[in-house]
Each structure stands twice: as C-alpha cells, then as structure tokens.
Image (cartoon, rainbow, N blue to C red; front, top):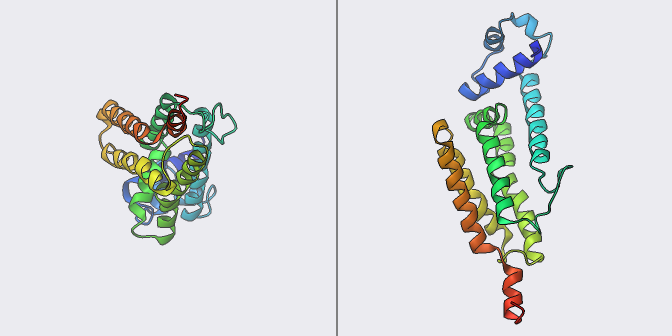
Length: 213
C-alpha cells in the first residue's frame, strides 16, 4: 500500500468514527505515521482527501455492480425483466453485504451518516446515495417492470418504498452486529421472498385470467 493509499484509508477510518468535520489533517498524518507537511505532498487539503474518498467509493460501487453482473453494468448477464427470485435474493445479498462490510463502502456510509447533520452538502450526497437517489433508481426499474407486466401494481414509487425500506432498516439493525451476519442474510431473504409473493407474477395472472394458465 502506497503512502497516498494509507492516507486515504486512515482518513476514511477516522471520518467513519468521528465524522468529517471533527477530524483534523494532523490526526490523519499521525495515524499514517508521517508529518503533516508530508501529507500535503499527496493531498492539497482535507477536502481533497474527501473528494478522493468519493472517487474510490464510486469505483468500488462500479466493481461490485460488475462482479454481481447487475443489469446495466458492463458484465450484465440478465435483465430485470427476466430475473428470478433466486437471482434477486443473490443481488440483494451481495449489495447488502457490500454496504455493510466492504472496507471502503461501510466506512464511507458511516461517515455520511454522521456528517449529514453537520454539513448540508454531505447530507445531499447521503440522500442521493441512500434515500431519495436509491428510491428514484428503483422506481425507474419497477416502472419498467410494471409496463412489461412482470410485477403487479400501479405506483412504482410505492413499490420501491416497499422493497427498499426494510433493506435500509436491516442495514441499520446489523450495522453494529458483526457476529449476526447469517441472521441478517436470513432476514433479507425473507424480505425479498415476501416482496416477490406480493408483487411478482402479473404476466402469469393475466394468462390465467385469459384461460392460458
């Protein structure tokens, strides 16, 4: 690991523990084991470090999307229109564990959660990633699935809330329970299964109504 990478790693750890505003550049330098002037050779300011954290998080997010072959990614192997319940559970689990345990994503998320109450810009970033942005992203997906008669329902926004809200809750519930990961996965599986029971099968229902089932 290079000195620049160590700076970023230690900074993100401190940001996740204290929040961005409460951490000083000198603290980051001490954690790395270098003098503050040496840190400035790699990053111009604390804001520069934060910006790099955002870039690294975005790269990790892109990598996980490709690794699980999420629709819309470069390595996509299936579409949301054809996704099975098992595939949906796998995708949900992979993304859930990424935000819960990934060395960068978990710290980045915790930093945003702490700092959102002190910094309007960081609050906007938090909402874009984990609240309004997440719901808008899923609303768009569910809107297409409703049109394709893959799922039941008329309001993609409400459907997105029904899918995402319990997952966000589980993320908060197990954030401080590293020894209960299997329980978290089990609960998440039940959430996805119940969602599928409620909303999937619009196309099959129509076929049955037409006497084709």
